[in-house]
Figure 1 (tube, rainbow over the protein chains, first blue to last red):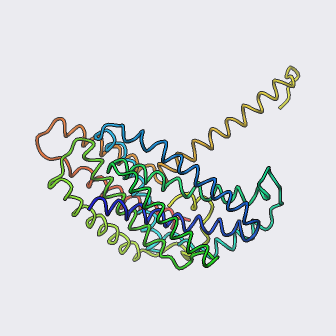
Figure 2 (figure 1 turned 30 degrees about the vertical axis):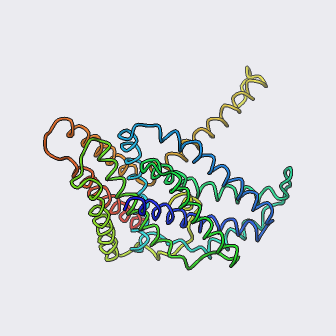
Figure 3 (figure 1 turned 45 degrees about the vertical axis):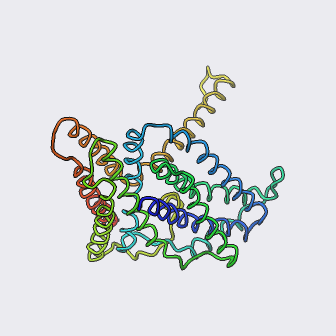
Amino acid sequence: MTSGALFLAVFLACAVEAVEATTIVLAAGTARDWRSASTGLGAALVVLAAIVAGLGPALQAVPLRGLRLVVGGLLLVFGLQWLRKSILRASGHKALHDEAVIFATELAAAGAAPRRRWGSVPDWYAFTLSFKGVLLEGLEVAFIVLTFGSNQHDVPLATLAAAAAVLVVAGIGVAIRAPMARVPENGMKFVVGVMLTSFGIFWGAEGAGASWPGADAALLVIVPVVAALGLGLAGTLRRVPAARPSVRLATASDRQSP
Amino acid sequence: MSTPGSTGPARLGAGLGARLGVRVKAFGAFWFDFVIGDDWRVAALVAAGLLVTHLLARTVSFPVWWVMPLAVLVALPTSLWRAVRASRRG
């Protein structure tokens, strides 16, 4: 189960972030310059790959119990952030991401900025917009790849899942040349939140010295219980009136987090 | 602000120091936001849960796996409720 869960969690997390990064790269390329936007995208992917390649082997060398304690705790904090935001969005208490509106806004902002050449990059603005967007969205995925992968002693599988997600989303993005507004981002974020929270509970407790009844099989109970808790909380909060209409443009700070 | 005793290099040094301070602060704020997120109490509860699990695992003979699920059961609903209350207050 754990290898499949590892692949699914990393694939979905990466796909969600890739959808958001694609919107930024598309805006930079459409409004400014495709060569500079592509160079920014490539440079960010190289930095992310270097982070995973550099830290992956280092994490594998840490004793498993200590690794599970630290990584379990971090995964749990991350997972609860994803779960919290997806529940707030599902219940109407936080704005849903609207990739079409975000794309239009990024496009307008990118069109207004002055053009400046830097070295071999024809348009520095398009490069930095694309680079920062991909790096910020990808940093979280790199963290998930490292933590999940090192705990399972399978960083290559986690990297493969991330690469597969990037290829699928980038392929669709290139094909349609438009923001992927119909992707059920919040549902995917909820699943990732459930996975990270469940594995965070499991590994964190093990790392702190607890033993789970049934060992790894305990995850077969933890995952559905966390999912049920999340769905139950979303259902309960839906009955609480929202303060204001829930669809607004995601802000820059929203984009840096799930 | 310039004072009668201040010199050009001193002002330059102060300016560089201030800019460095702003960058260090922004760097710290980015990582705090990245790791801790919107609600630091969730991270604090997770850390407390891990600490309690560790202490109980060393001192008692009964199973202690339930501490972390309990921490999540407390952390998630209370954090959501705080977020909803804050958004309703505007």
